[in-house]
Image (cartoon, rainbow, N blue to C red; front, side, top):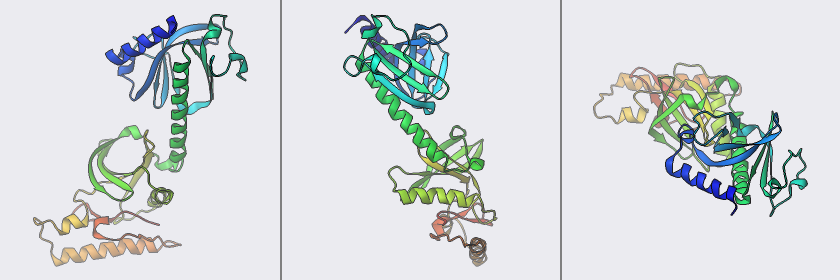
Length: 308
């Protein structure tokens, strides 16, 4: 192992052990290493410290800096190539090559082509270069997939995931989990799609979101919007029902449910269904039961769950 590779190994272990300032403020750090980065303006190689998170690539002057020189979005990566003694030579790469001396020709290189710029990285270890190449490719694909799901949410109801804070679980089903949460200090319910659901369940989830945005009735749950988080999980944000489901209300021993209240349950549910069936073609609820009727007060009931 040459001097540069030993230094990089030391820096990586030091960062992992002591949690240096630059990584303290960056969530979900995957890799961090010292690299030689080609500066296109000065046409020279400069020593830089790079931090790879699940969404961005941060470039620092040193591992001890608290502010990055650049923050590059992984989703803007168009292409990544790697070269090294055991893979390809620098001359084999079909991209514009920066100048490098004979000593650097023994190094390994990563070329990152982005939508608005390109980045050349050089280090003395092919193993390090391949590790970065693999993780950059994986996270680039993950972010691209998340963006494709994000596009399934209409722009007018798309919510920034950073504005939603999840709390405790208040319900769960075969395809989704419902959390109590807050959105801009407003108490909300967040329905999050589970991992490993089949394609039809995912399509139904987005269909429900698209249908709900066009429904405006006092007895149908109000949709605030939707988002896809960094883990690629789609979520629907809607109004929070303080009393939970009708099932909870009916079986609450502390509540005295009168016949007049039961009649109100039936009338408001029928009014909501009549509204849904007035569309052309009619909207069918598909899963009508007390667990899917939400109660905000003893006077107000809201249909929720699957629509098609």
